Image (tube, rainbow, N blue to C red):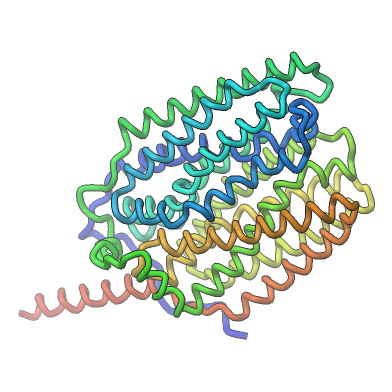
Length: 453
């Protein structure tokens, strides 16, 4: 098996390119509006046992409120990529935050216990889902446009912090507003309060982006970014370039399957956990909170810092997949044995390592697809994630409806084992890092020549 090593040297600060302090505000703004958007994702599925009877609909319909985000991505991926590539970061950010705000406001008016109201909730979710297509395309590009090379892994992890915080609040807040023992009137009132506060946050995010967000710094932050700006590849031409890149194809397939399976687990987490431990809904709140803080926030930043220092993308991809596989297998064993605290811990570990894979995937793909803009490769990754999520959701829904929960576990464990073995086919050909090294060597030769002259 190929050694987990790379040749390029770790990036060092480039004195020829300025660093703008405004870059930190840009990351905060991105985190703000992405968090407001991701809050919409699972705010209904996390309380599926309350929402389904309240709206007099099925559990499957409630799960669609989250699945619809995946459908949006498949439908709108091409036009969104075209908008981002043709215009700039501010246009994309304004569109994302405005669509999120519009969807959030719509939901406020549909809290009555009626199936018709829930249909309008799904329409609002569809609108928010269009905004999320912009959100998930942007973190790597925001970081590349505003941050120097030696900070990009950490900056990308910080950018993803907002989305993780949004998903955390989307999982925690609904449980605080409504309870299974509430009457219909109390549930209606709780939902209205939850959705009103949601709309206020989305309005603030939209206004902040409109007033404060800047599309790019006055000058590129690195030599690599200046070359990427000069490499103006049309998005459909980039697809053809990427189709010949074996490393890219392996990466989107492996990470697409891994992140897709994690998304599916999020959809069915309520159903699976309560199957083994009834009346443990508050456990899910704590599990989601700890997973988001430890994996989505701390873990992503930690892995980003380590990657900035070591550049061992293949090694950490392999280790990440091994940990995901082992933690899921351990979780299944403890769930079947009804060991509450052991199950509790292993669910958190599984979420931790699954969340950490997001930052690794974005930066690894950016490395192997240089000098193509990161938007197109990330778009391809997201399509694979959505396809895996949708297909798995349909299959697992049918199996769980028939009570075949262990078949779901066996299929998931087999999938994680396959993708872990698939890291064998990855290489450590980091094109972006080699580009930095070549630029540095050319500059050093030029400086030596100037000193001799």
